[in-house]
Length: 202
Ligand SMILES: CC(C)(COP(=O)(O)OP(=O)(O)OC[C@H]1O[C@@H](n2cnc3c(N)ncnc32)[C@H](O)[C@@H]1OP(=O)(O)O)[C@@H](O)C(=O)NCCC(=O)NCCS
Image (cartoon, rainbow, N blue to C red; front, side):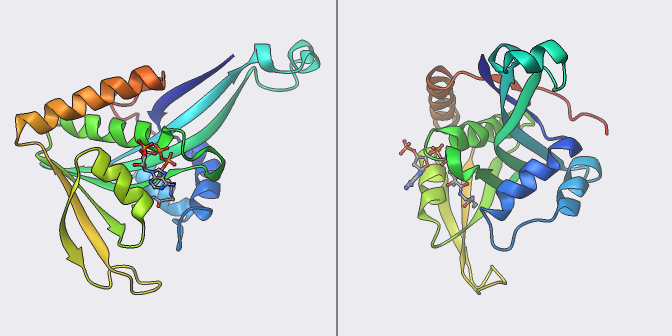
């Protein structure tokens, strides 16, 4: 049996996350950056969406001899949220290339927005490459709006970034988010050990 689970990122996830990151970003973050975000940064709330495959799906010989753990944890998507006073800043988000287009990026984004609401942030902000229409579509779907363009923001090629924001001051925005989130949870059932959880001590 397989299930989907949202939870805080752990240092033991870094190898899988870095592998997805290297296939998703140029330049990618380093393992050291993830370690810092998980263990040291006081503002950071890193999230993973994992697929948990329980032992009943493992080959019989593996279950009999116990040569493998009883469940396989595969990271399908991840993200990062910095919560600084009343600002929530999405620092990163990616889905494993083999699992894109199935709503999983949406699950991670919605959980980070829900976390921002939980911390009573006034808005969520992020930067996105002007060429990254896929990600912009995802953010537009959740009510983000382009509020600024940062010229030459990306050092590797001098590309501009859109500054996108989701403001919570209008109650109808929050209501629309909750409705969309609730529909998503029905479409893609998953357990959530992130949104309302305290950041674990490492
Ligand atoms: C952006 C990213 C996280 C989206 O993840 P995903 O799991 O594939 O996205 P989802 O399946 O949840 O799609 C959610 C929405 O995103 C948009 N979207 C997803 N794939 C798209 C595509 N190929 N073309 C256009 N829009 C797309 C759509 O609005 C979609 O909603 P819909 O299904 O109702 O049309 C993923 O493409 C990724 O990891 N990209 C590389 C890293 C990256 O660019 N991160 C963003 C940095 S700012």
